Length: 381
Image 1 (cartoon, rainbow, N blue to C red):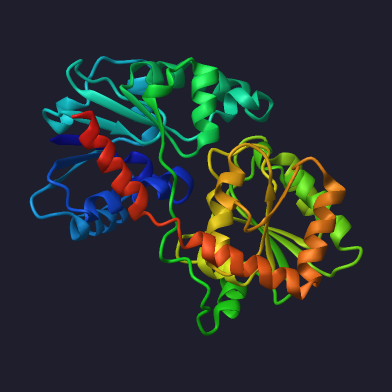
Image 2 (cartoon, one colour):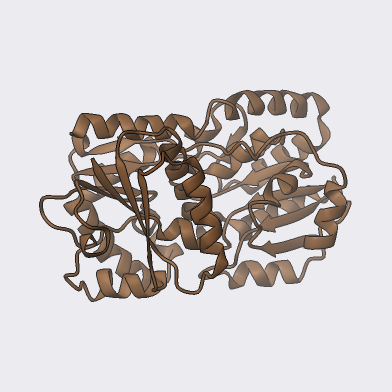
């Protein structure tokens, strides 16, 4: 088969959907399936970074089976052309003829009718929690995402919770929607490198004090304003800092303002993949109080690094955490404060959560969703 994949998010986004796409596509190519792949990516402004990614892809793909199609546009311009202006310029003008096109980031480009289409919907937070989005972005997503889902022959989701949302909120028949769980990269492991804490201090300003870690973009859905309140309560009995690894996004001002008034809260901004495992390993506990997630990868990454996890019981997060972490209502501030205090002070509880977490994270490899993706491909032929 001739398969096209929109690799733009993977090329341009360091974390989140970009990292998930890099990992999944890399794992698919590493299986050396008997298919030809054309990876389409808007690479304007990336410079040598795109070349590095291209070499990594070529290194894992079967010889002669991978073709890279760089486009001298940014992702914003591609969205304007294909999804805002809806210009009828099919992606096959760039890739050549295809049997299947896979869009791993919500939106399908224009394609000929004879090309089968798959799209991944990572979450429907803009419908479940519209108050956590700026009006302009929400309005755009409310138009563009259902349009792509309606066109797709198959919709993939990261969790059963999101699958139910796609069925319930977008009216898609269950047979068209398939859950493909995410994986954890081998880079996340429990063994610390020499000088790891010192390197975090030098590069990110992380002190030698114990810290609660939160990972994810700074936006309302992540519930960081409430987490800061929770940590204020924890600090009445335990001397601990809060470190947030995440780029400020929309409606971040309340969190930034709250952090600015507290010397024990540090917002690092975006943290490179290379530094993230060390940041997990050196944490006392991961707090993941999100109001809604399409899956929730940070708890699994923390578990793989040997860090106990306290996480939200909302939406898909229990599918990732299972019984390997403490799951709590993300609105219950006192319960969160009690749970984090217990994990910080109770050695037996910490040891149990760490052991459970390591065992659970080990089952979430990227090879598993890659093989499921390829199995679905064979079933759809």
